[in-house]
Every structure is written in structure tokens, then in C-alpha cells.
Length: 293
Image 1: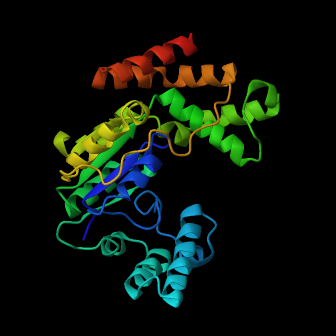
Image 2: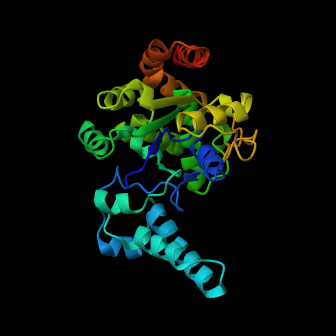
């Protein structure tokens, strides 16, 4: 069957928090590997599925090993191993994707992958053809904070500890500024355009918009709202954590980098506030205006 729902992002806006909490719900089924990137990446060759270095391929292969160990020590089962093998080594297309999700009464199946917010209208249309009742969860965050968090994570992955002004040289700063100016990087912050693309094919009541600030302010209520949207009426099986998952390290922001973000994302903050007009988006707009000036 095709999934009942997709959480399409945004990157660094609480998708891991949501994945961890939905994984605790007995009525929800998620793939054993978060972020399959089936819908936003071209189908890889068998060679790449077996040896590819992309994180989602490596995690899928590791999941096969884990499932195999479960079979050997008696803690797993054959069906779990088959699912893991199909996920790691199957030919990735929409038919393969549909077979990943079990068809079981009372079970709500979905996937969480931040890259899906940026799918083309053509791909979105093909998904809705497969499941006209598809529900979409789009978690949003202050576009400047989201972009900064992504840049800081990228900086740490390069082997550095922090991104504070005193820790980076001019060459490193130019490298980061180049990353910020990349259209692919900025597309994660193009909320208004992404929303418009999805609303062309789905009615508004099939799309849930969440706001990052609620993770700290009211996590249990936030999770309960999402469960109700998915048609799960009961209370969460476990209280939502008050702390974020994969939080940043509280780095002091480099003012040159932050101003560049403000200049490039001010128009987006204006559009998002015009669309939602709530306390969250008003704060995002004020932030963008302050740093862009």
C-alpha cells in the first residue's frame, strides 16, 4: 500500500523529534530507517545500493545486518529481515516504495523525510494519484534559525567544533557564505513556494503545519495535535520530550553570516507571515528585518 502520510520537512525543524515520538505509537508504522529519500532522489543503481556512501544507503545496509542478527539470536523474525533486505537492496521506484508499507487495519503508515518538501509539482501529482487521501505534515521553523542550524551542522561535520566568529578564518567564512548562496541550500527555506506546490494537488485539510517553537513550549499538546490529524484519537503512549533532538550547541552567531541569511531570507519571512499571520511567523519576520538591516 502507499503511505497514509508523509512528513516532508523542514530540515532542522523537528523531524527527528517527531520521528522519535511517532515511533512510540503502536498505531503508527514507520520504516526502520529514517529519511529514505526515495521520492526526491533518482533511483540508484544496484552498485550504489550495495556500496554507495550516501547516509541512507549505509543505514539501510546496517539495518539488514541488525535484522540478520535478530534472526540468528532469536530476537527477530523472517518478515523483519525481508523488509530490511527489500529496503536496502530493492530497485527504488514507486511500486517498490508502496510494498514497504504494511496493509493492516488500524495501522497508520508513513515516512519522514525533510527533502520531500521540495518535490516538483509533477512528483507531487504522481503521489496524490496513488493516494488521493494522502496526509502531509510540514514542520516549519524561523527560516534564519533553520538555515543557521544547517550551516552549523555542516561546519561541525567538517571536523570543527564551533562556528563562532573567533573560530573561523576568512577562507572558511567565504566557504560558508558560498553554501548559503547555493539555491539548493536555500530551497529548504522556501516554505511559501513549497506549500503552494503541495496545495495545488491536496486540499488544505490534508496538510498539517507545525511550528518549531511548540517543541519546547508545549511538546505534549503539539504531539497530540499531530496524532489527531493522523486520525489517532487516543493520548500519546508516552509523553513527548521537552528537549529537542539533535539540538545545536548554542554557538555565538557570526554576524556576517547571519546578515547574509537575513538579506537572502527576508522576502521569505514576509511571505510566510502573510500566509500564516501568527505569533511565530511575526517573530520570524522581526528577526529577519533586524539582522538584514
